[in-house]
Length: 289
Image 1 (tube, rainbow, N blue to C red):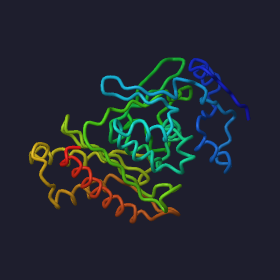
Image 2: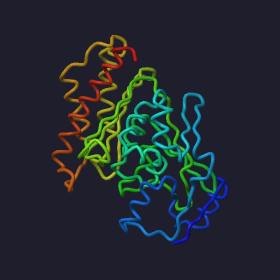
Image 3: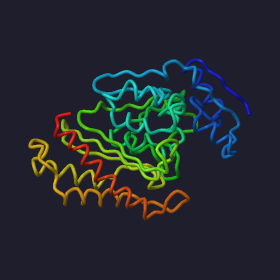
């Protein structure tokens, strides 16, 4: 297996174009697990860890441009105020050692349905920035995740960054797994309340072939909050609204049975998480946070 080491973004794009079969690696938390278990044997590895701009982030006009190699640990430590949903999800990823190596860019590259970062990226309306020697294109997260379990990247493209709007209201993340640490999600859910644009958005994970938004549930909750004047009054949410929301979130899922859980359990877990997450996010909004 060939190992390609680059130190500049231009060299990385050139190497990717010349070796489209090369597997990009930065933190290696997903790649090395696949290699160790003989799940993947690429012709080459393309090391991106030394490319400086991939490990940087900055905010411009209400958007955080998060370099593909910014680690989960840094997201937790540095971006909890701007991207609270993604920071909450990042805190649940593996162990402290994994969080210091793993990156959102790597998770997007593998596009696993179980990735903890995916639901909050969907809920926040994130956009993936992909680049090649041909140029740069931006792919909304809702279009990035493919039902075949892959991301919407061309063979010569690399993920440069993910663009995430700064939160203007509560964002929450919930996850059910076999244990608190080092657990792959049985089901995960993220919710974003945006009082500025008066809309609610969500993302679900581990309950379908690919991460996806709960689009009908989003429309329902957005409509109910507006029609009832709840954005302005901040009154309590009725029980019927909460349960209907949980039902609609569950309808967006298409889970299957596997060694970690049954499809029936995943649906039940998702409905409960959706209600509880909404309750916590709304309580936070009522408190003016």
